[in-house]
Length: 115
Length: 107
Image (cartoon, rainbow over all chains, first blue to last red; front, side):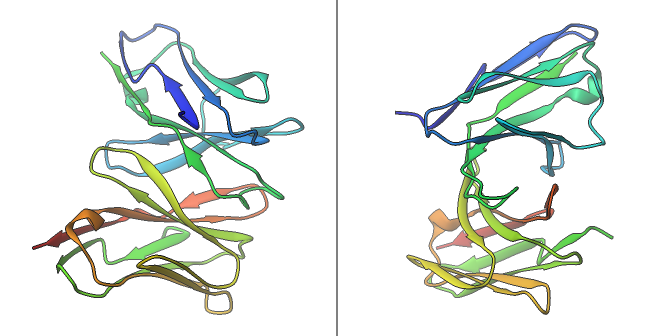
């Protein structure tokens, strides 16, 4: 039974399109994250979200927006896709006493290719 | 200069060797994470530390808060340990990653 799942695993789309990546966790965690891993394999946090607070990395363009319909889901919406958005996107969840304090469980990643 | 520096960037070891990967950071932190990324791309959390030392199987992680330094040790290394090891530090509202250490363990 997968703890953190993401769909789709691969996403190929054209510049200018709008796309979403879905993430679900069945661990009962209260905090979820989105990360971007670029072509050099460098991980960067994009968002963290719990029931009370959305923390946004200030370097993330506002074309990216997280949407959480409930505690178990945190979807990533991307508007007006650009070539530079091509990367692997990871979702993660944790049970945090304070920000970043919990062990993180990662989804399998979504490889986004913008052509 | 990155807030989180890892060394070495690349490491090749023979099976059975003792391995050490280092992580230095320049800010006050609330926690430090060690992650493992397999060749297939999946990421697994190995340790979360705020002080002292933790051990899990052949893996040991230590942290020295005063020196702003952490080490990940692998005893009796095995080819299945081949992966990228990533250090990450969390502050009040930020999680910053090192660039990773690529480990290759050969027979």
